[in-house]
Length: 282
Image (cartoon, rainbow, N blue to C red; front, side):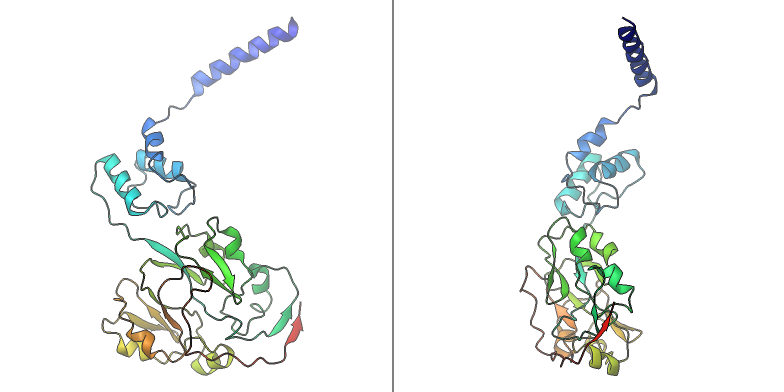
């Protein structure tokens, strides 16, 4: 009887607390959440689809085009939900700004530490001869929930068909090699991040940008600028004419998005490196 009395009192207390301190929820957030893809990738900048929906309903967020996974259709549905004009949705995709695979770079030493890029970067910037380049240990692969990143010939590559532009790989890369670019079938990108002088680049990575400025000179819309020996293409200006790809002597400029393993463009202009004797480090 005592135990039953205590349970009854506690039950009443719980009900009272629930009634007094309950927070009313806006049904619009639940309804809006039904329009979102529900994969909770975080590409919108919020913890999940519900977080984005609540922010829109509360008015703390006004951009209806942030759902990268849902694309233009979802952006239009969200805009229609609020009765506003659909915003311009520009689909993006992750891109690894490095091609320094095993064919074009050397190994400076035998790395024996933890098999992750973050740890290897802390040891003389990693074992790759290009200290700016991808280490291929898969930190980006580990955080991708959509099977959009894979390692091929020692370099991370992105399958653009699977990528939802959530940005997790961008944050995971300790070399800051992954960036979001417009999802254009003829995307033209300088797939290199090295700022060394040309002579040193040629010695350590035969497919890296050597800062020759040929691409800058042939670009008809002035979309290419030099940033500390590295050519950079402004994706908002580029018309994907391909002129820069044709004149690049090291094939560091790539054109076209990657679909699946083995589908990357042939970098025939770059010559494979002749491997030198390796040193050990741990």
